[in-house]
Length: 241
Image 1 (spheres, helix red, strand yellow):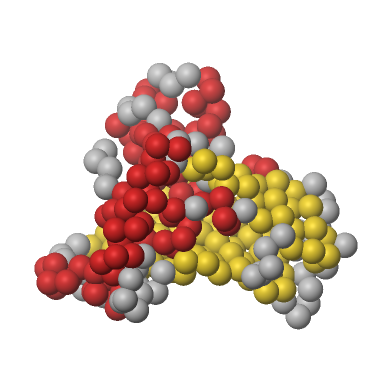
Image 2 (tube, helix red, strand yellow; image 1 turned 135 degrees about the vertical axis):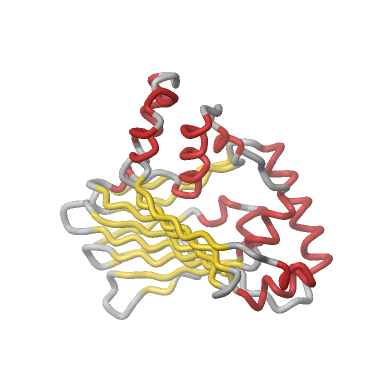
């Protein structure tokens, strides 16, 4: 699988709207959905004349475990630890749509979980599916950060940690190049967290979070360019009553 440069990834990110929605029930189970939607006006500014040359159509839906079942021979070659990692994704549902005619580009990843700690880093789903299909090493481990979640009934945590400091420094450098070239452009590049809890919120670690009128939900928005150079800035801890 061919991987994009960090600058190209940043350009793609900077023309996107990402919404991460989590709903937690009273028994600790719940649902998560991550939606990535390309903002056409922003992408048109970045792509320039290449925008009109796009000619692609893809509309794909699958559940991750279908890859495990279909490519069982490849799957069996991975270590027990690697297989266990893949199993964490087996119930993730994926919908990918790219249509240059309709000008609609979106990725959706969703999962029903029994407990919050089961939630995997959904941004790695496509990488891992490709690994199984092509019998690759764990290419998603090339990501320079990982996202984890936890909830003990009172405190919810969204934890982002750096796994490759060298790649992080590269991302910071590319971010500076991007801002120098496109900083004056009016781009839609939002990453929004929308969380719904079974009890009222007592406190939130990020002062920019907006608590809903029901006191059981919150919204937090930040720029994707900021996330790319400092993923840990999106760490969040929510304490319930």
